[in-house]
Amino acid sequence: MPNKHGDFVWYELLTSDADAAQEFYGALLGWTFETREDMDYRMVAGSDGGVGGFMPITDEMKANGAQPAWLGYIAVDDVDASAAAIKDAGGAVHMEPWDIEGVGRMAFVADPQGAMFYIMNGSSDEKSGAFADTDPKVGHCAWNELATADQSGAVDFYTDKFGWEQKEEMDMGPMGTYQFFHHGPGMIGAVMTKPDEMPMSAWTYYFRVADIDTAVETITSKGGQITLEPTEIPGGEFQLNGVDPQGAHFAVIGKRSA
Image (cartoon, rainbow, N blue to C red; front, side, top):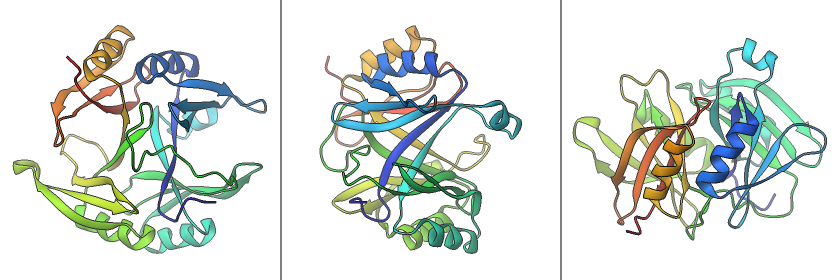
């Protein structure tokens, strides 16, 4: 696994309708898709290679409370040791480590505040470019944002378990501070205190679009909802948050060309 411990390496959508989700995100992000031969799993590619996959929610998953959602994968050197360490730190292991032939070993976990994600040791010799950590790439993840019930606890957890560094922070007034995570060549994301109306701690992944206004038109015309209108962020780009037609929350970031 050429990615280092603590890298974001994959993004996965759990959805109630994979065909409809493919149509929506394909139009929004310019993704191309390839279905695995052994299962209904849609492999997603952006402008520079693989980004993630779509997994239909099965009846069993639905019975256990699964809902449409985006989940991220974080690379680890040892899945079993990391899962044990997460549990010891007050987190949870929802699915114990397992292997997928040709893919790698993984586990489905949650941090001590309940935000869920996967940990993975991949079997590929190629470095994942799912998260564009150096150059902006359309269709790839550009930012990883954690909204949590315990901001200081979350900082301690992720810096300790994944080798991230928390450096700069930004004052957001009544919303508190926005603390930035660094890992490797630059910032990979940030952590903030979740709003009261947000039911639980969760990660939000921001995917890059070529034009933010075109993204607005696509989201609304394809049956999605915009929950936060385009907002300018440092650097002159814009972000927006939305909900796809199946109910999964997502976010995009991009420039305004007009």
